[in-house]
Image (cartoon, rainbow, N blue to C red):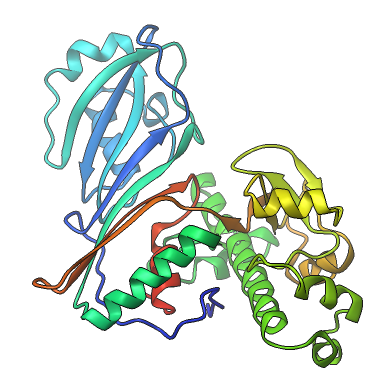
Length: 357
C-alpha cells in the first residue's frame, strides 16, 4: 500500500534487514511488579522466535496450555526481544530446568495478577542500518531532530499485513461474510489487517492534505480538496505538522478519555504540548466516529463490518531518541522508545521516505 510521509526531505539510502543482531526490543511494563503473589513473572529474552512460538515451547515443556501463560504484547520474530510473561507460581521449580535454544530467562519476580494483552507502557528499540554514507547520516540526524520535536504518524507497519502484504484482502472478505475461517485467532488477525489497511489509507490522506495546506494558499486549494475555504484557513495557521479539522476525535496522550476537538485555544495548546493527540478510526461496531469536516474524510475509509471497532492514535511522540553514525563501518545506530502498538519500522520508513521491507 502506498503511503504519504510526513517529513519533507528526499528519500535516504541505507540498508536494513531485520535480524537479532540489528533489531533489539525491550518491553517496558505498565506497572511495577509487587514481588509477591501467586503468579511467577519471568523476564525472557528470545531470539528468532515469535512470541507465540516462545510461549508454545514453554507450554509444551510444562505440559500446560498456551493460554495459561500471560503476556502483554507480540514481539517481532526476526529480532532479539525481551519481554515479560507470567505463569502460575507452582511451575517455578520446573522452570529451573527449562532449556531451549533462543530462549533465556533473564530474571524473575512475582505478582498478584496474570499479565494480559496491553499491560505494557511501550517498547525500547535498538536498530542498526548499514551502507550509510556521511551525506545520508547528516540527513538522518536532521530527520531524527524533526521527529523528536514534532512526533510522527502512527501507521501500522508491514508486519501487520503478513509475509506477502495481502492479509487485508482476505480480511475484508471474512469481515463481510464472503469467506470463512475456522480458526478464530486467524480470523481475527486477518480482519484486523483489513481494519489496519483502511486506517493507513485514511492517515495517508490526512498527511497529503496537511502537506498541501502547508505548501499552498487556502484559496488555491478550496476548489481542489472539497474542503471549505474557512476550514482550510483554520488549518493553515496551525503550527503543528498535523493539521486538526473540525470534528476530529482526540484522546489524552499517551492514554485517556476520547473527546471531540472543539477548536478552542485550549485544545490547540494541549495538542501542541503533547497532552492530547488526534485519533483515527479502526472501523467496526461499538466505535465513535468523527464528525464535521474530519468525518467527511473519515467516512470514505469506514466500512460496515462484523467486528468491534476502535480508535487509534494517528500521531505519536517517540521519546529518548538517540542516533550515532559510525563512518568506519558505514553504519547508523538508533535508540528510541515508542508507545505500545506502534512500529519501529514505521519510524525507519518515515526517515527513509520509502518502504524498507
